[in-house]
Image 1: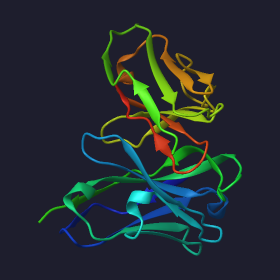
Image 2 (image 1 turned 135 degrees about the horizontal axis):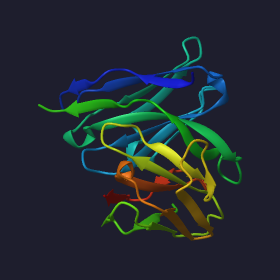
Image 3 (image 1 turned 60 degrees about the vertical axis):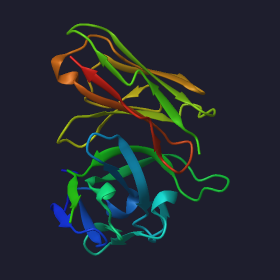
Image 4 (image 1 turned 90 degrees about the vertical axis):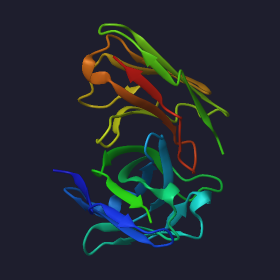
Length: 129
Length: 106
């Protein structure tokens, strides 16, 4: 059974860092990018970035540049999302999602794009003093 | 970055009604568009990819159409379990962009 299982909820103080894991099972881990999407309370879906488990290449949304790191560990089929300098506005449910590539890299883009067919269960991160 | 505008932002309909959601892109994205359903406490679920391809297991009352800059998502006969928020997402390039969402009440 294909699945992405994420780590548990976190409570952090402003200025701290959080690291959320996403462990894949039931499919070939290195064959698909993993993306991270967050959803703040009452808000929409916001893309944060992606990591290619084969090689570790990453791409982050501009607004998170400098405080977001995504890594992958092929020995444990796990991807990690680390966000630093947390503020209250970062409180959200964070999802990892598997990408099925539909459009190959072209022009300035070095990564496939497509749709997200498999999602983790979500990890609630609460930032509060 | 290519932006997506969904309309309406929310709607209320009755069981059995036909519901239509529109997603407009700021540039031509061919058919590089997907639709998801999100409910509180659950991960988003992919319903339609490539603008009009229904995912396996998704009921046929759901459908998607369009290309270029105008896309439509339709629920042909609304069911109570269809409540939630629907998002379009383009994959013409990175960054990944989602529409603002359409909240559907039944």
